[in-house]
Image 1: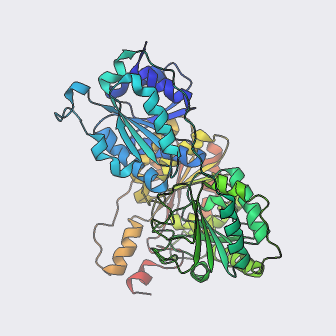
Image 2 (image 1 turned 90 degrees about the horizontal axis):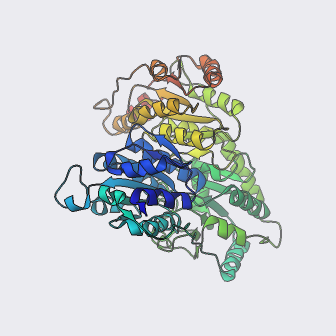
Amino acid sequence: MKTGGQLIVDALVANGVKRVACVPGESYLAVLDALHDTDVDVLVCRQEGGAAMMADCWGRLTGEPGICMVTRGPGATNASAGLHIARQDSIPMILFIGQVQRDAREREAFQEVEYRRAFTEVAKWVAEIDDARRIPEFVTRAFAVATSGRPGPVVLALPEDMLTDEVETVEPQAYMPVEAHPGRKQIAELTNLLETAERPLVILGGTRWSQESVTAFTDFAVRWSLPVSCSFRRQMLFDHQHPNYAGDSGIGINPALGKEIREADLVLLLGGRYSEMPSSTYSLLQSPYPAQKLVHVYPDPSELGRVYRPDLAICAAPEDFIAALDGVSPKSTPRWAARTAAMHESFLKWSTPPMAGPGDVQMGPIMAWLEENVADDTIFANGAGNYATWVHRFHRFRRFATQAAPTSGSMGYGLPAAVAAKQLFPEREVICFAGDGCFMMHGQEFATAVRYNLPIITVVVNNGIYGTIRMHQEREYPGRVSATDLTNPDFAALAIAYGGHGETVEKTEDFAAAFLRARASGKPAIIEVKLDPEAITPTRTLSDIRSGK
């Protein structure tokens, strides 16, 4: 006989769970009690949205469902921000929510929410466990749903009294991953399309990748001399210094790469949905009928043909598809090798940061210094805002599992993601980039980093405004500033108040020493970089945008 709380934890352990992010609540005390007697690491967070984003980051970097636990009502609705990120980014995650007792449901009891109605839009599956004897069934199914096809978040609501029921039931077993494999005829069709193409191009994206699949696909790209682009915030899927890399497809795309995608006669879209941001609002590939021949490889059949009608649809995860490419080689030297080399040269020029700009701090030299002084396995985390352009355009990613950034454009993601990444990979350096507006959305999770001694380095790019919104505002309503100015704390002092290390950078030449001191401190650190608000993008000022330049 075991309680429902014990059965939840037993099912997690059976499915290989090693870590949980949570904000505690009385509605699931029985689960917390059961966790007391296990080796599962429990990260106690300061806000449920941050906890959910940490779980998303674990799923993002490992491919295994990240686990988050929150209490009912406001706890659950706070966590919905992380659910939305995981849904749009196709990240496996399971959110456990404490729920009101069963005999109080449908009375709008204290903090009651009907989660199946509330979260269906932002979760892949939402369920409530009424009978503790069915916990092994529900949890195993949750893992299967979260990881199969297009991965995504699952929500399981746990009535408080169900968790204290003592029942006898089956022992939980680990879920069985579901895979789909390409057929030999499909691989033959792909080979024929490549043999007859003149201007082929590959776009990598999505999830369900591994270091092994990234390496194997690189070998395939070399055999065929293929130019390879990575989708928005999926840059870690190909080595940026590799001669086949053509750049990223996303917001602020290199115009030369955009032209190449539009003029390609064959596009191999592997692993991603190629949604609005990567596709430049569906202009690089026209929806529903692309001008290019399109081979779309995706693990969920419901996505194939939903936005783009492909010439060849292959239902497979990247790893299984790439395994089928082993030994697939061209009959002769590909005709487009010189084009691939030219595209890589264009990328190198595009990703070289400018050394000048308005104000006393220039981000270009800072990015150039970081490129020379961080290891290839350094993990970069960020949320959303114009500041992120400096990372996405000018940091050259070299290895898999080094990027944690939301394709959904959610602010506040970077800091909790950095905390999660450092907990997952304590031996690797983790750098969070955040704007002043972005940091303040989940900045309280810096306390989580301090509590668990996770020495992340957070670079807060402080320009005193909601930069992206101000840029759009100046473009659409020049000179009519409204609701985009910010008043900020002293971020370096805030870091020290939390128990971390703090630095303030007001001149470009001061950044290197500040970063080295932050690294040497061995503590979670914040480096506040005071950026002139005129430096709104790497190449344009606010004045340029206001005047229509």
